[in-house]
Amino acid sequence: MEITIAVHGHAKEFVPGGRDRLVVEAAKPLTVRQLLNDVGIRPEIFAGVFVNGERRDLDFELTEDSEVILMSPTAGG
Image (cartoon, rainbow, N blue to C red):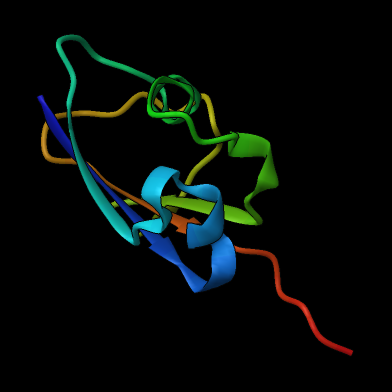
């Protein structure tokens, strides 16, 4: 099962290698939380998680060809 993780904003600094896109092969269905933990990303640091364009929580179960988009918290002042 292939899943794409896309990272927006400065959040890529929290992704191994500082990458803004990862493609992960999963042998079994996973939740968003399990996927992120498996690749070394702390899920609680992101302001929003979207799967295939829809906002989802970390316990959402992913399917084949899912695209997970991680949004960083806004900053500024």
